[in-house]
Image (cartoon, rainbow, N blue to C red; front, side, top):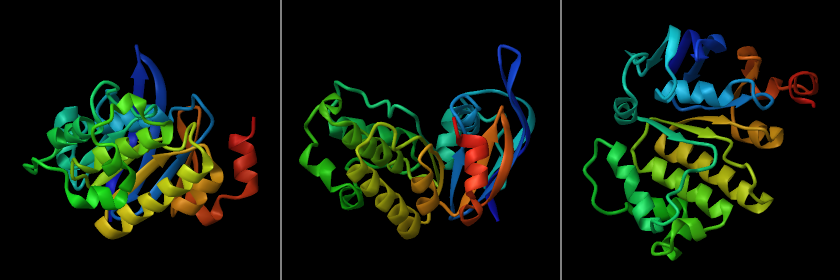
Length: 233
């Protein structure tokens, strides 16, 4: 059963369409990846799901509720967590203060960080009092995912979580996302450029080109031909 479903979604910037009739469904409990070259609309699609871009036509349904015109803060409380490209850690706040920002988007009333966060991200415990801006890129990405997890989401939208991160940390992030999905049942939709990462992480793929979904299916069917056609420079 779809947790997130987009039907004929068109989105524009200043009346110039950038997404054209998007149809896609992400089922509850699965991990899906959104692929495509730079500039084809992947980030716009995620931003439209969380409500940061206005939908011109079409509809978005989340957990059987129509949310096309629901404001962003309410979508967060419905259970949609967005971890943007660039992570957007507040550099002068401590790791602990950055984590607590995740509470604001949750229906739960929390005052302390649940222990499970440190089970998923042991590194964070060591750096709780360190400024977020002093962490490495990989550490900041883990902090951003942990902050998103604290909103108690049903789905996590991640925009290029491996960008600029060393391979060993990429492996850690992949392992942790699989654990979060398996142990907490959280659905994940990830925008990604690394094909190997996407194929080992996700069960389903959507390929975008020029603002449209041009291919989709199980990641086992993500063939060399599809990759070459839509991702080769």
